Image 1 (cartoon, rainbow, N blue to C red):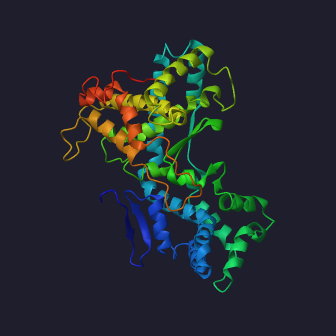
Image 2: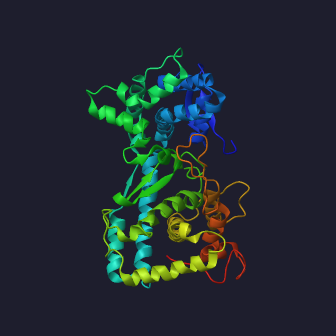
Image 3: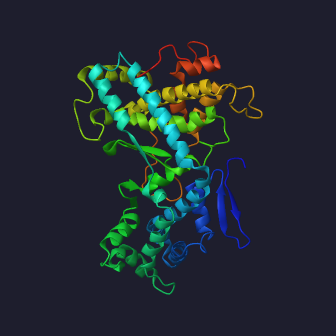
Length: 414
């Protein structure tokens, strides 16, 4: 399928399942084409509202469409979440990802224990306690499944719209949506307003739940993993584990390491501020090692904006690769071979997928709630920094010492 999505439909043309790479951006294009109008009254209503925008002056057409799409974002998100859950539930995706999380967590503990020059005894104890307390969660949007979809339809049912009404009245009604909701059920009203007016699911932005495979919440010491990581080329039960660790392992590991970035190093295992979490001794060593990135890459990028990402990458590639090696030890000769890729070792496949995971992260296009097109850490440059500073990569591909991908002076924090 060449990485594109394939939609299976029944005899009535209704969508049955999603296969392979079907990101929210693809789903949104199908929404606009009316593919889901028969499945969701809310989505059909939003599409009719979008058509109503054609009545407005062309100068304001795009603003009208954006207002309607932002208003309908929850409808799109809830329906997409249901489709994704229906397809992935048969793979028990959460059990699989939980297992990967626990393996990486154990490897992170081993890495912290081994860092005698970086961490003193007290800091090490604090960090190990924080790792032990780190939890895994999924967004409420995906957790509630059909219930979330039902709530979504109810929220939009209260919005009154007629194809005969004036387009300006429609836009005014969008702004006044909260007054259309009944006051008798405060909990339901607040839920609808949170999802529709704030585009949030609890404390989480809908955009993060739809576009991010995983992210770390400092204030909760929790890692949020979305099923999108399973519905992609990032993790697939049919792949050799070298590829799965190279993408899913690296991505999850990267977010876990944010527990000890410039913000996380002063937050305890409960996410509360604690200036004693990291000793002044360990902080000085951290700063000294971070200076390597500033000195080496400062001319090519704004290192101050990418430092936390670079440090997380530095640790993530280690715990993901070590977890992969541990898997190979436990399951010798059981790794699958990939047709036409037999010439690559599994270590090489791991690093190939690390690079692919960085370069092919789905872009946030189509329905953007927040305008932020600035890329402070270009993907190619990030790949170069991650791989060229890791000795195991250089050994796997036999890169000559002092070459671009095996630099003489390597930057290493973890």
